[in-house]
View 1 (cartoon, rainbow, N blue to C red):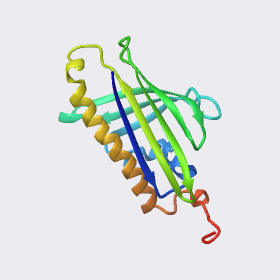
View 2 (cartoon, rainbow, N blue to C red; view 1 turned 90 degrees about the horizontal axis):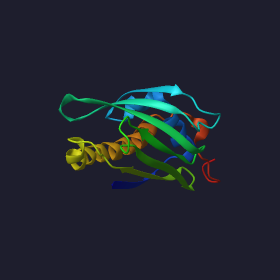
View 3 (tube, rainbow, N blue to C red; view 1 turned 60 degrees about the vertical axis):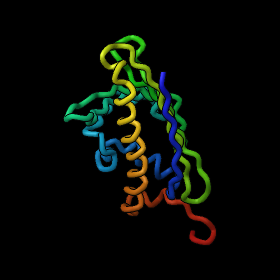
Length: 165
């Protein structure tokens, strides 16, 4: 089993980061691998149980589709997900957590665990996930850049400190 962890400090409120992450129609604007996101089942009022299909780019012009079940949702703070596989034992899990650090400052924590059991994918697991991990990290940096470049996006969620409010 492999594990990838990533942390990034963002100059945006957790509420605003969360809003963009839940805005699936915009994922293609900042996530370089994402081609499409489709919500298949919305889950409950918090999003627990949501099932989304994410179509993404792979090397050599290939495409993949991840079926992701969302759970343990804490609005504006995070969730866990399981990428469901048709092959027993191939499910991958992850967690995304937003840690408010102060006005318009959030630490994003991302982790993912994966273990491919079928050949030839098992042999290619390292190169495949190095590529995916780089793209996931790039997506998080671009999410932050997108929010910076679009101050009109959810300005009601910008934190105001005493000096700037």
